Image 1 (cartoon, rainbow, N blue to C red):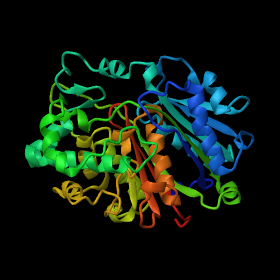
Image 2 (spheres, rainbow, N blue to C red):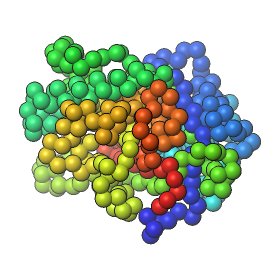
Image 3 (cartoon, helix red, strand yellow):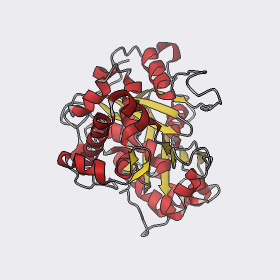
Length: 399
C-alpha cells in the first residue's frame, strides 16, 4: 500500500481474552472486562500507566445500558485517559481494532488499548435483533441477524445433499477446533460420523439453516494493545505487525424489482477483499495467508463467504471444506479458535478474530496453534447489513 503508507507502523504487543460462556454470573460487566484488560497488560508487561488511550466497544442496545464506557472505567482503567466508545453492530470489535491502529499510526498516541465485550445474559439479544426485521416480510427467512438465503443459494447451485454435508463438515471442523481452545463457549466433541444424524435431527431455524449450524450468544471480553513501531520493538520480543485494514460499511437495498437482479452490486466481503489485496499487491491470497480468522456466524454463510474472500471459482470453496483443508494442518486453516459459531460475545467477537490471528502469528495460541509457521494472517468482521472489516497481520515488517 505504498500510495497509502502509514505515518507509523503499528504492532500488537498484548492480547487478553476471557473464557466465553453463556452466563458469567460470577462477575459484573466491569469485572469481566478487567479480566481481559489485566491479561493483556500482563501479556505486554505493562501497567495502565503506560496506556495513552482506550478504545471501547460493545452493542449497548443488547444490555440496554447507555454510555457503558463510563461505568466500565472501573474495569478498563480508562479514568483520566483519552477514551473513545465505538458501536458498529457485529463489526464493533473489528472497528475498534481499526480505530486503535489508526490512532497509533497517526502519531496521536504511542500505546492504545482496544477493548470489546458483551454480557448478553443481561439483555435480550435475540428479541432485539429479530425485531429489526419486518415481521411480515421476513418471518419465513429471518433468524435473528441471519437469513436462510445462503443455505438456499448454496443448495440451489450444488444440490441440497452435497450442500448439507459441506455445511455440517464445516460445523464439525469448527467444533474440533473449539475443543482445543480453553476459552471457547461451545465445544461439543462432534465427529464427522454424526453428519447424517445432525442433518436429520437438528431443529431448523429458518429454511435449511439449522440450530447446530448457528452461532450462540456469549458473555466475554477481549483486549488488544497496539503500539508504535518504536515502542513495540522496545517492549516486545514478538510484536505482530498490522499491515493494513479496510472497512466497508454499506446498506443493502431491497427493491420491488428484485435485489441483485435489477441493481447488481458486488457484495461487501468480495469488494473489501479485492480492494485490500489489490493495494497490497497480493495476487494469490489463498496461498499467501497462513491462517484466516473469519467472522462466521453460521456454517452456511462461512461456505458462501469463503468464495467471496478468496475469489474462488466453481466449487473450489466446497472442496476446500470437503477435503478438510480448512482444518488445523490444512492448506488454509480457518478459525483454529473455533470461530464465531463456538463463541459470540458480539461486541468482542470481531476483535477476538484479530486477537486470535495475532496469537497464531506470534506462535502463542497454545493447543490450537497451527503446527506450521504463520507469517501472514487475515481476520474479518461482519455486521450490520452486510458490513465487512478485514485486517492483515504480519510476522515481519517487510512490505
